[in-house]
Every structure is written in structure tokens, then in C-alpha cells.
Length: 112
Image (cartoon, rainbow, N blue to C red; front, side, top):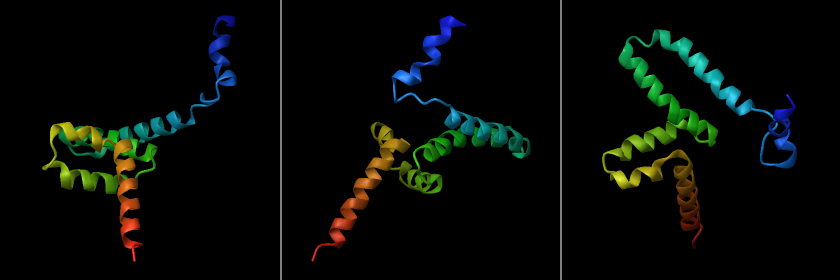
């Protein structure tokens, strides 16, 4: 396997490359547990809905966002959104927006 040596040691030359894949393994564990729990969703439509919701909730967890808060805000605002606004509601962008909104609120309340 000398032809794989460069691929196996890339993490030693690039500090951004992780030496393990624990994050991926944890997400796969959720998928496997979800598959087991999906035996009890009731019908095919329920399974489809669970699969659709698994993606944004996993993304929220990856970005340290409470999925319930994110999905609640998304669903409340979804009916008034324009299609061009949807990319701003991706969890990573939503988190940045929330940080700026919180900072603005805190600066407003600290004014004399």
C-alpha cells in the first residue's frame, strides 16, 4: 500500500485535516438509530417526513444551533419569504444573522 502513503499522511502536512472522522461516525450513528426508530413511524409518508427533517436537524447540531428554535423561526417566517431569501435561512447563515440581531438588541438595551 505504498501508493496510499500520501493520502494516509496528509493530516501531518495540513493542520486543517483531521486525523479522525469521529464527527462523521457520530452522524452515521444517528442515521442508523433513526433507521431503527423509523420502523415505528406509522406509514411511508411519516418515514419520508422524518427523513426530510433529519437533514436540517443534523445540520443544526453540527453548527451548535438548537434545532427546535431554528425550525420554529423558519416555519413561522416561511409563508412570508421570497424564494431568493431562502439561502439566508440555511442554518449556518441563520446563526450569523441571529448573532448580529442579538448584538443589536443588547446594544439597544444598554443605551441610557
